[in-house]
Length: 227
Image (cartoon, rainbow, N blue to C red; front, side, top):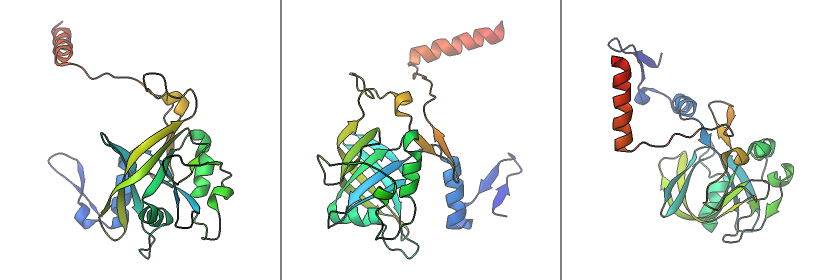
């Protein structure tokens, strides 16, 4: 057993120092959910395009605008095409995966040999990059053109790549004049544990309260309990 039940609280503890990398992976991807998916397009030194999905991904800053992707190496520690291409060109494009892109995205995750064009296999339409040399996936509702900002080598098996966003492109009608993205129209996919996915088209709003609003809220709760 790798877990430890704490008598005082009844909680279960997992000591990561005692777990294998695979066990840590399963706990992380099962609990840190949903994770957005970066459908990353890059080009190599010869200009040949590659597309691959990564769910170790998020936005970290707006000033400067920074996106981060975690790219795992091959089992023999060779760089995957995405990592190699970003090292060579210092550019990449993050395409957001909508529910309509599910099967095409999954096709680009198949471990094809280097002689196979996974973009063609997935039936995708490429748009030329405007700020970088990497193409955009036309079927993706949102695309971010990025220049490599920093690469963090955190171990032999993985590196974290930070990209500065140079431009965003979207399908018509997705963003209003206040720069709000319509979440239902975006219908982005999230990654769950194992082989699981979820959709983000069902959302709710919960504004952050001011201090005054919080004080009034707790006062009403106290009155309700007294009554």
